[in-house]
Image (tube, rainbow, N blue to C red):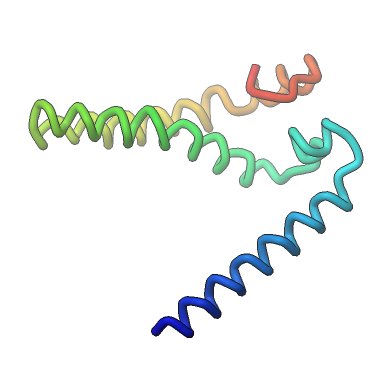
Length: 109
């Protein structure tokens, strides 16, 4: 079992080092690092935005609130995730991208 753990850990570290080196060699400026040179696929950008939104506000925050007030409050988490993501992607997605591109923003405007 320990040998398998060492092999998996070493493989993970090697892959991480390789990807880091490859990213370092292909990144030319701060725009390339911060917003992937503005050449990232919209689906990947949407997933990144969704993960950022969900990670702290919906899961950590509402999980603690549900622990305090009971599991019946978890419906609010699901509602927040689905409605929030729908609004973020469908309603505000194009406008946010256009505004960020026009402003030359490196983060969400």
